[in-house]
Image (cartoon, rainbow, N blue to C red; front, side, top):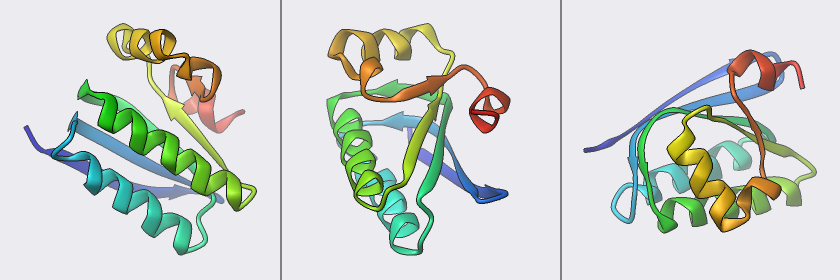
Length: 111
C-alpha cells in the first residue's frame, strides 16, 4: 500500500490528510511533506490520520520529528484521529501525552 498526502489550507492552518500506510518505506514521504510545509512558513499543522491503515515505529518517529520542527518555530501540530487501533499505539507509546489528538477535523479546528 502506498501513502497519499493531500494538503489544503483552512484559514492560517494547514491540513495534511494522510491515507494508506505510514511505515519504513513511506514515512520519508510524510517527513518530506512536513519539512516542506515548515520551511514554507506553515507552522500550524493538522495531520488528519482518519484514512491511515497502518502506522509503525518509523511513522511515529516522523510525527515526533515533525512536532519538534514545528515547535522550534513556535508552531503547533495537532493530530486528527478517531481510530481505536491507532489511538492505542499512541497510548502504549506514551505519545498520547505528547500530541494533541482530536477525533474530528471540526474539533481540531475549533481548538
